[in-house]
Amino acid sequence: MSVAASSPTGAETGRGPTEWALRCELAAVYRLVDHFRMTDLIYTHISLRLPGPEHHFLINPYGLLFSEITASSLVKIDLDGNPVDPPPAVPTGFGVNPAGFVIHSAVHRARPDAHCVLHTHTRAGCAVAAQRDGLLPLNQMSMEFYGRVGYHAYEGVALSLAEQERLVADLGPHPALILRNHGLLTVGGTAGQAFLRMYYLERACEIQVTAQSTGVPLVLPEPEICERAARQLTGEPLDDPELGGEDDYVDADAGALAWGALRRLADRIAPDLAT
Image (cartoon, rainbow, N blue to C red):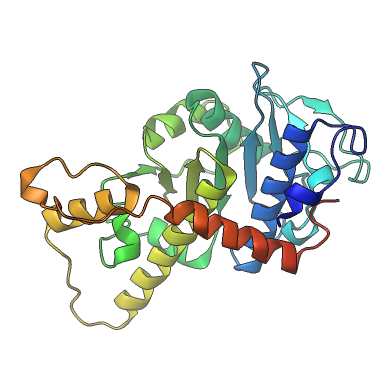
């Protein structure tokens, strides 16, 4: 049983059951990012849009490590960065990372499908973000992002509202963005989907850097094979005869099963996340 299913709701938390369940989902993502060593002290961020016409979203309080994030400590803000209600579990003085607001509010405003936005500064991610050719189709994990990742040129620390328009234009309709000389960003319809995309984008970057470090020539599959694999991994139809795949099996439950396993892991490693 997940923490969200057994955690207090409603009057016990001062929030409705839907918001509380989403808080638990997002807190689980923070703990999993920490568990898989994708953190940068207090400086990266994950946000999750709440249902409703108000366009409110949850984000981490600036100053807490990801290992300290709980469901009740998450900050609820609007698209202009204004706090909607105070986070009772956070010490006075903890606000929102300005760069986090600039990046996340831009994506939430421009992409109604991007319910969750996840940003990292990992070693492998930053290494690939510094490479002219970006992410290469070197392995099956990278195929999910073949032709499906945007690139945003470095403009300095993301503290300027003027950068927002260019950032969302570079993200476009893609599920992922490589911020040149900076890091990685993924979006998802759920917190779990955004996390799984980041997990595999990070692994693809790790494999690329490792393969490049061998100093031997690298093999890249043919473009049509890369596109076929991308569609298989993303669940897109294989409607091009040149791609084949008419008899391919479809693993429609893979994402849900993987996220369910990760939620169980989060419950074990962070039993306090639903507080």
